[in-house]
Length: 103
Image (cartoon, rainbow, N blue to C red):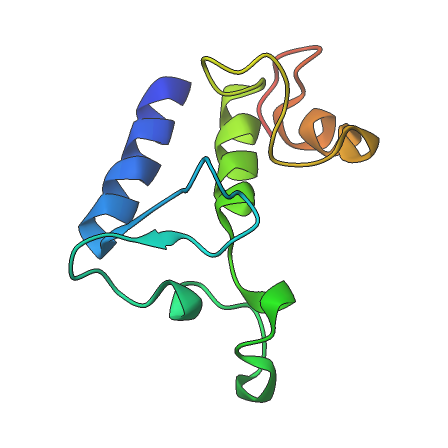
């Protein structure tokens, strides 16, 4: 079911014309084709702060969401990419990777 959830996220992003850029995780999501402006996707701030870099959803944010769903690193990667090791506790809070209970 976790794999299906990650596939659904990828499909939703593709439908919007966006994808995570695994070569530049700290950049906004990559626009593909005639997709929506990545700078406007899911902004998390009042209109005045709209285009500040810290308010834009990045590829790293999407990787973090997928890693939380999976309870581990993305397939093909040996370590978490979504957040630094100092914030690894966030994965434990969301996915309970030690006991397997969903939050």
